[in-house]
Image 1 (cartoon, rainbow, N blue to C red):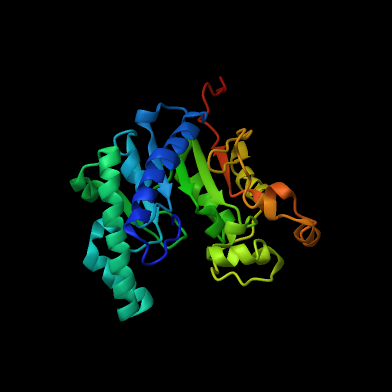
Image 2: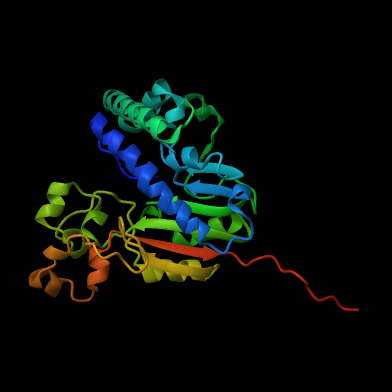
Length: 301
């Protein structure tokens, strides 16, 4: 599913997004994956990116680094399908005029995005047709049991309403010993509302207190502990940690939590049952492992 884009974003925004994906998001993901207790080496991995997005950046950037990279999303059209199919699909979703406008702007935005990403990462322009991309209904992944060694996602878990079913699907498509690595956008921080910046500036935690209406209906309110418990019922938890921009598990000296300076006494009194870390952390990462294959099993004589 990937981050939400506003219609009409400027080409400069597309270039910044490509730079961020290439220089920040992707390298951080690679470093995290290399720290996992995997049963195989990275060039042999079969990796699934859930919620790969219309523009599937991780699929493009992982190609050639791993044995197999697949992307799946509830999107029914991808950038590689071209302008016409994008416009047709957006027209089905939003009506003819609005859909044509949104589809055209979205497609042109990612034309600029990939123009810049090609320069940064050396991605071949003709490779898009070779990417293994699939659409699904948000329920069962379109892959056989045990198809992957890694299942990863970025900004997806906060949109999952049937968390138990989602975790079960991750478990099903992973081979024994396979791992999940998932970053999610924390609902309880100001930007977790997915509301425009000007709304968040006026009422940073209004979406938590109920003062501000959250427009996106698919946002869940799961806290980190609830996410951990859901995965823990089927996986061995490797670790759960805050992951904001340059922040890693134990933080960086120059790290600043999101809107920490806005968390004054008035907000603190209204949110007294929620810890500061939860209210000022943009995102979390959970890593977990499916039970590895049993070796050296005992046999009766």
